[in-house]
Image 1 (cartoon, one colour):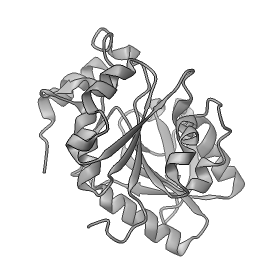
Image 2: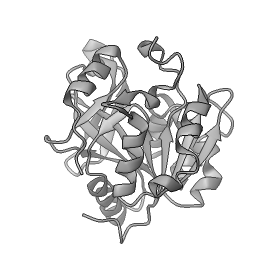
Image 3: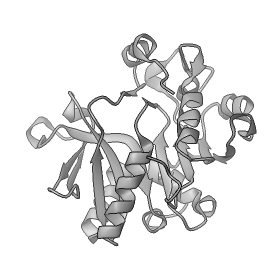
Length: 251
């Protein structure tokens, strides 16, 4: 499934975090620059975006930014154009998107959490978002979802029969667990949603923007990734070791 008929060619990769749970591995580099079988995680992400037609890429930076800038430059060697958004103080996931409002140029974008390692069919996610907007013009965001074994550690998402998000709870207590579907860390976002984020303010998708969108009546949809999709959050030493053992780059 290609992207030739979609409006989307831009992405924001979130790469500003310090990766404290992965120290000492992240003492001299940000988490997305950790090597997976000899190549930085972020390089796989850029290649994956490019394969799905995303060639305009913004990367937000805070911790050890030179490691990323020196490695990728302007992205031309990889067939993409990369711009950098320096943050100080750090702005959070939604705040990072708000700062890049000018980069968006009035169009939608794909947002990727920088610690996600995946071979997800991004084209299918984008097509789902476009179809949702065709049915429901109030659609401003589509998130990819996956089944998790640890529902109290993530943001849980409840859907109706059409895939519309009707409930979101960030890191619920055990008695609040109502599903095992969680945000997979790849989103498609319309500029209207980004403009709802206060400028120059720390703002998080799960804590702030998702609840506000649902409260205001904006439509959010969820696309459950197929069972054969590889997806791993490289957030802990155990998950990093798991990636080294499992990951095989699929063309």
